[in-house]
Length: 243
Image (cartoon, rainbow, N blue to C red; front, side, top):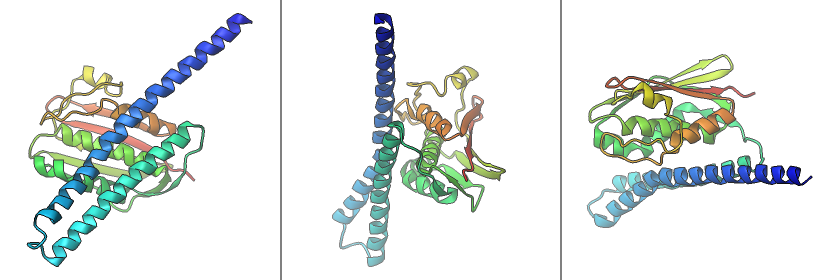
């Protein structure tokens, strides 16, 4: 009897430790993702504060709209955290219609500063792709893959996003012309704490791709990658078409 109780206690301790490790990864990832919209807000408010008289009415209106977009993005990230909290606590996934065009465009807007700084060209090779899925997971996956592509693409490089609506699933490809990686690195790509500095020395959390794999697989999707040193990397995502 004592052995059974000890085994139960050990199992519960292991589950608690794994849960704590997962929450640590999520916290780090959320805080990392908050940087872009928060920095956008700070930059835009600074523009309004530094030169209010020099700006035209239309310029002020444009800045206020961008401030609103960044604020809404922060709200969505908080909603994402809340959704994951409920889900990991035993709740079910909240499904809704996902407009992939809108998701990608929103993430590109929020990543506008590093894209501009590196002069990276980005092409969306699809239009009007919609499907029913877990929107927070789709957004999180796209955000991480785009951030990764920008991080490892040099100045003047390119990123291409493809999406194909297949029977019962959506397939998304994110390709970059970046540094690429060895077969050895590729094998460890989704392992935790597997972070490499970007072409400009950018540092990640080391948990992004691990969490993407975890949450994408939780909704029945898949993620994989192909890469070659000096020839860039392509990530492959699939999302099931929920009914």
